[in-house]
Length: 349
Ligand SMILES: *Cc1c(COP(=O)(O)O)cnc(C)c1O
Image 1: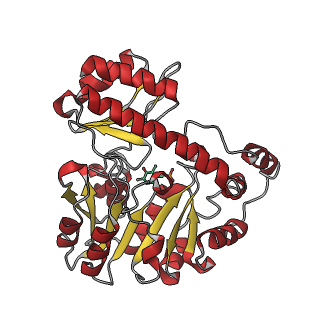
Image 2 (image 1 turned 60 degrees about the vertical axis):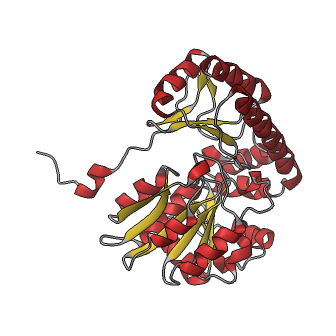
């Protein structure tokens, strides 16, 4: 006999981390192929000397820096343990048993998990052709029980970004008492001038919350730090749901130092974007259907061949990320790693 566990947890798919393997090229977790930005490792290492102290609970200095960087009031910010940690706080803030959380599918794996942990019901809205989000269908799926809609742009794992005009229409259709989260984990990689940037919509929409992270463009995935930007009452609610002292001093100072490296960050992101375009072009030339991508990965709709394709990549020394019978997501790595992947894909084409 074991203690009773909440039945809501039975339906929760375990988060499948991108696999690691000694000697294998890891293109399975959308990590940044570059090491920490200049000066970041030194600042983080120095911060480690204070590990006998609790961190600053309010992340005061980082919040002030982000406020200046984004031109938003400090009260609009909530820093947390990665944007997934912040997402968990958001869901806890607005959704519980009896509430519905609407999100696209397939999209980010954390959405069903965090929703179910909160005890809320999931409403999954299929993607539109081109593996794009269907913003109209997302708005149509909102009911009186909906408290939260999650929008992922660019969409993980498929790649396309939401356009500004679709997002404007969507916001005009969602009731003002329903929170809309725009997950912008890959915003720095976006090049489409028509793509949405959440900051442009924030002032006019008190029910909008942006989710951003230091894990991708800034390369701090292992330190767990991200943040939400939302109007004061929403941000305050999110802050209440934080694990106390969850964001370490090391993470806070590394994030501050990383923010100071805009030029180096943009240079690295530009290199990844150039590789993304090269890889997608080569895959299209091989005959694969690859959706547009504004992120640091490409999506191959391998369907029933998904497991086989991932296994073949592994034979070639590459870890990619298979998703059921839908497709494989492959992160953009260093040029040499991308060449290995293109060679492996050609053998499967
Ligand atoms: C990678 C990713 C995140 C970031 O997660 P962290 O917890 O900040 O590392 C958030 N949303 C999406 C869609 C992602 O792909």
